[in-house]
Length: 447
Image 1 (spheres, rainbow, N blue to C red):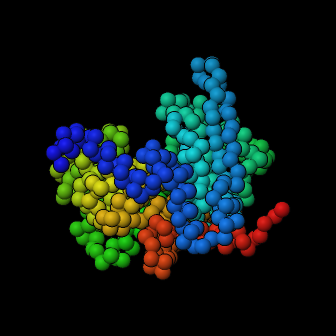
Image 2: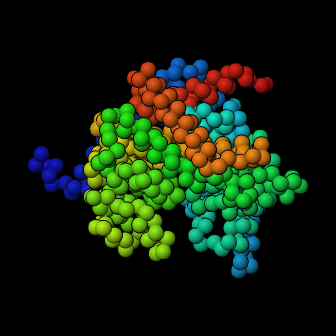
């Protein structure tokens, strides 16, 4: 003990993390822990093993159906030609056309896109909608590009994918770094090549171009629905339920707003520019007004809210923690520090497989990403359906249908967890893999 005390605290913590990683996954380095494709693969393998999945189907579902890499020439505003690298991965089409977002970010990688595509397959199966999974991305920094450059890049990327996307093939949607304007450009480019307007080729469009009412709020609304069900399942009350939200973009801000309106106490908000806390609860309506005016959550001091260190806030005691930003925010480095009763994953892949094991030891009730944030793809399905039939529902009808599907999915995952004596994440994977495997076997193998 005396010898250990001479080792700096940071080195002791890193050694503990290394031992913990090797104990749970002897073949996995700390760097590999952060690889989203390896995380997805490990969870899929565990679920497939629990299901006693046929070896052939196991191999088939383990790999994407198609991976595309395209190089996109774009004439920049200053007259020079830039070439961007883009991806589109289609994981599965067993249950219907593949479906998934397009991400614009500097750190987009093929492994990330593969993982996100496979997560979309399992997510669509969990909520039982007739899509498979896909994902796309371009390596770029959209914040450093003009509207003209983004439009030219988007249109050329769409043209490169023309053979592979379409309402019955693969239906893109917005993701990080993209929005409804991006989808309008994609829809228009595809339509010009088809010589007819094809609104159902993408989702997440402006309502005026065939978008669905309620689509922007759908992921946050889905989060609020599963939080309600989790409290009921655990015998907890909304009154006094403290919530911390990490990520105040579209997903996090809408989840916070809807939970606040239901009576949850939002005691912390973490965003790129800092952390905001109030143990008596933050007025989310006032915060949204402040951000709309100031462009940031910094400087908001209404009713006792104060700026705090994001890392410290992330580890504060609460009933529900909602990571709603990006992958790998809960790892072997910080999982042991969390003090939440429920972890509701608003982002895709926010928790690494090693962190999963740590949270299981702490008996944290996890609402996994492929369930918790499936409200977005469910509303995208609604948009696709409405575009194809040319009749559009009002927002109340969209929300009613979303509540029904998310509630049924929550109940199905909990039932699977009880029946197979597994945690919620593995139950969600088992439910999804079982549904996709069943459809795949029904269709048979074309050779």
